[in-house]
Amino acid sequence: MNHLNTKCLIIGSGPAGYTAALYTSRANIEPVLYEGHQPGGQLTITTEVENFPGYPEGTTGTQLMDDIRRQAIKFGADVRSGIISKVDFSQRPFKAITDDNTEITADTIIISTGASAKFLGLPDEQKYMGLGVSACATCDGFFYRKKRVAVVGGGDTACEEALYLSNIASDVFLIVRKDHLRASKVMQRRVLDKPNIKVLFNTNTTGLYGEEFLEGIHLVENVGTENEQHFDLPVDGFFLAIGHKPNTDIFKDFIELDETGYIKTKGHTTATNVEGVFAAGDVADPHYRQAITAAGSGCRAALDVERFLSEQ
Ligand code: NDP
Image (cartoon, rainbow, N blue to C red; front, side, top):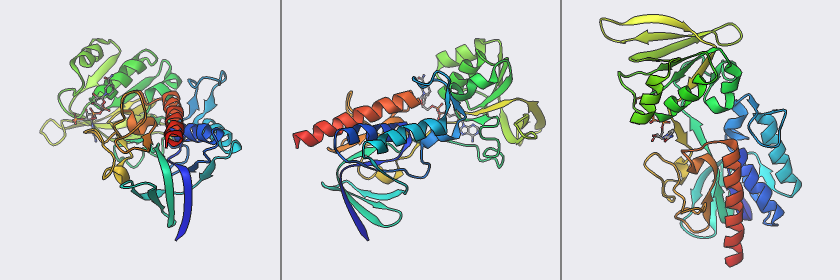
């Protein structure tokens, strides 16, 4: 087994992890960052990014992540591809094991493993990813100006996405598997009052179709009843909003999580319940989930690490 010791181990890439690496490397902390399953995080599965400040012409998610990554490396961050598969935060220095069997000891940890959008599990979801399928209306909604889109889900996220899209697209279809919405009453009211949002209750998506790009979805209404009805709905965009799963499985024995698995942080800081372990980005944020807010919390985590180390 190889060994590696660092003052700060950053687990996970994406805007939070890379920004934390940028700040800690500029503070001479010499961080080591493991990029994880999806280097660059969720942004790399979106198309264009037009709402990250500093890019007046827009950029792509992949380019944006590559830019921040290079900026961190320029100041000395040790960015490694690989996955942290196990951690032990029971004592300091903390321990982490990588998938290629390197044991890392670290004085501080920044967890920035993000959250993954849940998918329906349809075979074609990945095929049309970025070609009509998206898991983020604020990222991709703009590309569906005056077009027809569908959002699947019945919670607050789905309602929020549907409302956001209703100001851009011509028609929004909200596909809800039950006969009611799970979202808060106020969100339900807003959705039901919006003339260009049509809610399809008791409806499930069974497939997607289209030549190069998505052209529509296969639906079934009242599945398993005598009124079961199959039909197709032509749409240009299909937005998944059935929830996110924070990537916290390997931390759950040590780090306090909320009831949906997000890391709990203390007050306005990025500190977790374990002193010396900090969390940044979507892994600790079920609410905002934007690249810029994740980058901001990566910066905060780096400053928290810096303070923690200088106090030790
Ligand atoms: P939720 O878990 O609340 O809702 C998920 C929705 O997706 C449910 O309607 C669920 O249906 C549906 N769903 C799940 N799996 C499938 C599937 N396989 N096929 C079809 N539909 C499916 O997730 P959200 O992301 O909406 O919200 C997460 C948390 O964040 C909530 O606590 C929410 O209140 C909060 N939030 C708050 C916001 C705000 O206050 N502005 C904005 C966004 C989120 P079913 O009901 O049948 O289970």
